[in-house]
Length: 345
Image (cartoon, rainbow, N blue to C red; front, side, top):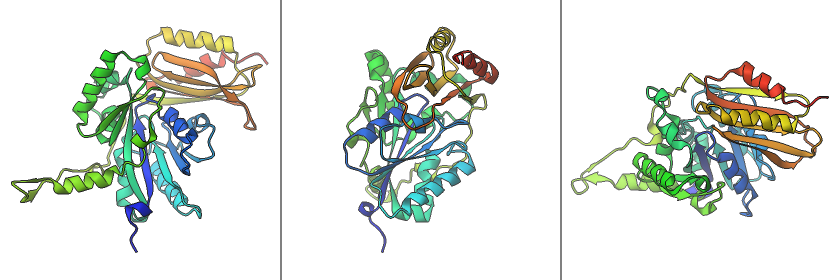
């Protein structure tokens, strides 16, 4: 007997350009008292996994994939299918699955998974694609002249969305928010737009949308000349899944043993803030600071960088891991500068 939508596990695809606040939103969702059993699948554009360590305070299961971008690497797509099938085979049924794409991912191929793979299609329902937009920095990525001849992921993510969250409105002016809203509406006229600070939003605005079912119903009703000829608009899951990233954009992953000197870290980050950070898209990391029982986290988007204590180290081994994503990165310089911040043994 074929399952109805109500019998299937809803799946939300969470997308947004680098630094939009996806991990912050995940933490907010997983900490809320919603009573749901949620599994999170994370796909990172990088050599080492960071996001799984940044999602804390949750009993939900986190699955990390770091073997390539799920939108354009076959091995990553196979890994996604494997993880989803593993979740479907569980004896205890999940209430929701959230897939967080990398900040450089095109969400179309991810959404396509839930319409092309028969076993997964029979057990899951694409609830919606949620795009987070950084109110302070998104315009420079929408207008990035260096990717005009390529596929602009920042644009793709907005175009594909069923709901758009303009985040970080607390650090943007009303004029900036108004311009971002205008540009977003120009790219996607149908998606509802909501605002947030620190990715805190009414979960009813992003979960339980059943967006695909509504869109499918509306598409079936569109016709010309009083209902004679139906108009077919190619849906996201019908789109050619071929995809390429800007070759000048890469990630540098750094892992160091030992503990960091907080004063040296502060000086290094101040130097970065004072430099030209237009091509420094994203920095994120976790660090062990000498003489401190807290795990420190680093978040950076262009020149806005914070380095702060996050939670006490528990049973997990102390470590120093950082990912830098940007254009024309110098791996050796980044690694050597971070090594200079190590505390003396």
